[in-house]
Amino acid sequence: MPALTLNLADFSLEHFMAHYWQQKPVVIRQGFKNWADLISPNELAGLACEDEVESRMVYKQGEQWQAEFGPFESFERFGDNGWTLVVQAVNHWSPEVAELVKPFAFIPKWRLDDVMISYAVPGGGVGPHIDLYDVFICQGSGRRRWRVGDVGNHRQFAAHAALLHTDPFEAIIDTELLPGDILYIPPGFPHDGVTLEESMSFSVGFRAKSACDMLSGLADYAIDKDQAQHLLTDPHRPIHQHQGQIDKADFARIKAHLQSVLDNNTLLADFAGSYFSKTKCALDLQALDEPLDAAELINALREQPLVRTGGLRCFYVDETLAQGVCYVDGERFDFGPACKDAVLALCDQDEPAYAALQSGLNNPELVRQLTEWVNAGYWYFKD
Image (cartoon, rainbow, N blue to C red):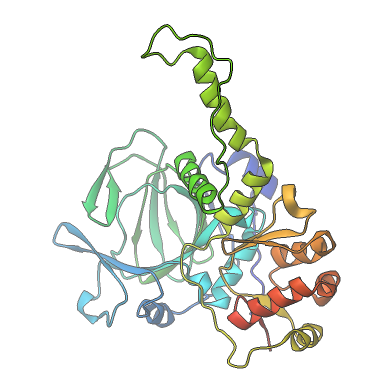
């Protein structure tokens, strides 16, 4: 399969990031030239029949929106009009679909959510809604009409227990997407897509976490790791005059106590790496029937490309990189300073070369862990 190349005819990547990213929607005509679907409708439907894959069917029954969650046994009862099959994290299950992530490598992977694919028949859509993430909607085969409104105070309501919709909006973009066209939409902009003919849409989503989510995650991490257990102290406290008062000095103590956790860069680095490397959806892990030992792993590395399985999240943080620390699927791994280059290769490259890993292969712990990862299917050797 030829490599997918992002084509920006009207502006540069730098212009896009400066003027559109997180600011306003834009249509990128023929963002992918000579587009060919990365997966067929039948293959997508097959994934929606699997227990491990998150999928849903959205349709209308009269004027009432409906949503059903997979796995599905068949689709015949839905008819020929007005429904959409949505499958999450298809990049976890299809190496071909995982290739769609690469053209968007100008945004770091810790911001990546997944590649969601929808197949729709004429009249199909999921209704007008607002997303809490950035999305590049890449039109596959067929045509779909998209309307996008401006960011603002839009009322949202539950059109169904599984569908949060928004009121009708005035469109600032009203267009048809053809195969290879891309529609970029930042968070907060209402949008509505309706399929004009049988079509596929490939959505590359970049999720942002709220401060509430991250603070909750930090608290869970600190509890799990027995961190931030130091007590608030107040020696030499003056005599208090008002029993019900939290005065300015006490408020400052409380704030400083909490701030001391946020100022602990090592704790924050380990939390960030672990938190953002956790996968939201299941991975397609193909454990080896005949596990390799360390020597067999090193021999295989010399002869075959090592490939990271689709959707696996592995990161390093500048704060702890010098110590050879990386974070894989929510776990922290410390391989030591001599393994820094190998850590960079594992996290930055989908197919790390033997030469890039070589310095780390002198470290028994890295070799042991890499062997464990390969045997479990987190990385695999491409024939």
